[in-house]
Length: 406
Image (cartoon, rainbow, N blue to C red; front, side, top):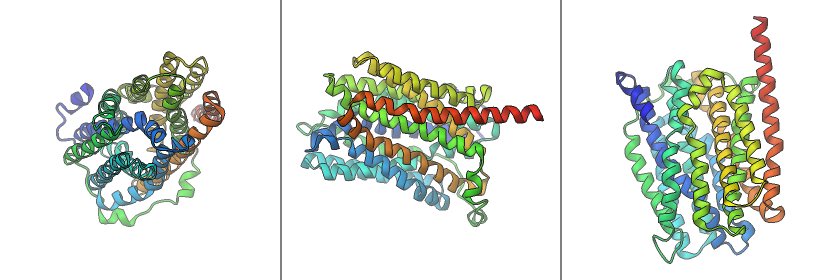
């Protein structure tokens, strides 16, 4: 957060700097809750489900509701503004936390899936923090604003798993109920932070303009690669990460070991954000995406090398860094593909596609792990990652050819 503070010094008149701070802190709290869910959802589902192959369904349903809510959330914020929309999202999160606590008290797997689904709707709102930061930043600061907001996840990486361990037995004998109660409290704290963001509501004339149709925007090669990078980066991360706690339990490791691995995975996801924006400015988003692809392939290699805590730890750290480079690189590219009047529908369409693949990865993760094993989960990563690699290399060559012709 030091760099964010330095950016604010001497520039208090510029709301983009203050927005980055508030959004980064808000993301830190939101992601702390999300990291807790990463740590405990599959295990709580395994505890509550009669059919253990359904253990990852609550987490998968959460991802499905992220996808289903992305478009309504974006359209709502287009009308009522970012701040009001973000507060609505936190209200949904608080409700979801209370439902999950009740479900664990009652031993109800069905009610637990309902609460998990609502967490998906909650998550869909705060996914737009990165776009909100970009909207008040100038061209020179935009990629860094996106990256610095995402750096708030570093706090989540440290605090989330620790809060999960603390909350696991907080409301004994109802294991994991305390974790979800803590998530509800984090939602309340986030509302207080969101009161300080300064993003103007859309003007009436902006609401009337719609810009180009999505078909035309979607035909841009830059748009295709931007969306594909974010989709694959997030999708393969969800596939592997969702299966990891259960794979570790099956391999004889303790809950504390799984929480440790998820903690370092989250650090891998967000710690690079302090410099990802600088790397994009210096080397270009396409090159950073390619590095992310390599990280994901390296993750597969490490995961296939063994099932000790060291292998799970190394693989998940690489997976996190790969996600960071592919997701932030894709987001940065996406902001170059639309005009002001088009941003709500383009951002919504992008996140709908991204979380569509995340949903597929999350739903298939538990079934694939239960049916074919940990190795199959990792082999499934290779094909989509290579597709993203090929598309990015192609666009990079096209850009280089165009520059040479110019």
